[in-house]
Length: 407
Image (cartoon, rainbow, N blue to C red; front, side, top):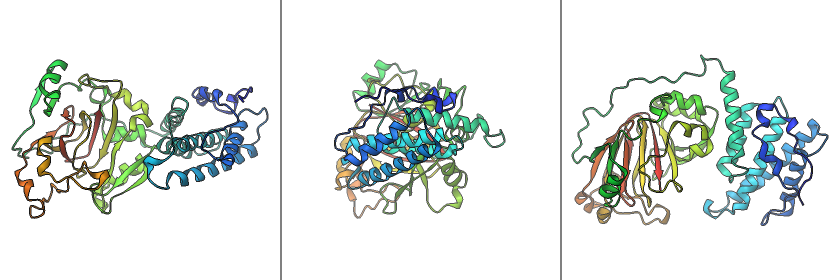
């Protein structure tokens, strides 16, 4: 059955109502397969609220309660067993419940905007895409409202600051080759098809992130201050005490970047699809023209203080790593060096070496001393091509933001 009533756009401020267009296509009642009857009924009761002619504050508060019940049930379902085994229908339920919670908070005019943004982000992080990424649109709109409400002494203006290289004096033995003004055909013929790493200069320096809207820690903070993101806690993901926490970008920057010296552990926003969550940030960058299949690109952001480490590992796809803020030291071993690198036996870490490059144990891993490598310091405005199955170790030398483009 499809509801034949109109969605109540009048419940919301006009600036919010314009991003809720796709809510008018909600079909009721919900009869999601694989989802128990009680959950479908609770979702339907939430959805019906926004198609009723008469809605009271009590109705909205009851809707918030019902949506929270569904979120609690779904959270338990999604956190039982392995994440990869979670039924996509439950992720869809989580997004729907998050949407209804957000809509109620928006309709209750005195609701805290930060609570609304957090509810959107939880739906984006834990759920599945819904209604043309409507939660992202709502979160972006509310975040912009908050930024505009803050005075200029609170929201810092991004400035392009000349910073001296932190890598000066760092001696490299076997440097990765650098190229300027390389055509796509030259890249394909000389590097991609031969599985050879290369640093590509001058190919992304026209991004707004380097020109009209120069990125810095403060610029990212200004754009994403109130957004909730997953932060890795620990020096590297192979450590026994490594864990993850959800926090706002503001909390992360203040604690782990601006006051890093006061923390015992390192915090890192690593391999996160930030542009899916905050699409407006993507307006400051572009897909590198060297990418051969622009219809199937996975983009991840790495943002954190100096000292973050990605242990020696490989990825199955072509990768262009763009350095936007700060510098990173990177060491690369070609696929034919695998026999010296001792891949882990653990299935989900089989692409990661047992060797700690910062303190290699040659008694346990004697063949490692025979491995040959290339190395570089990746600087702002540079792209590093990393071939599939090319082992690489990455260490931030300063506050850093990098973007990986996998295809």
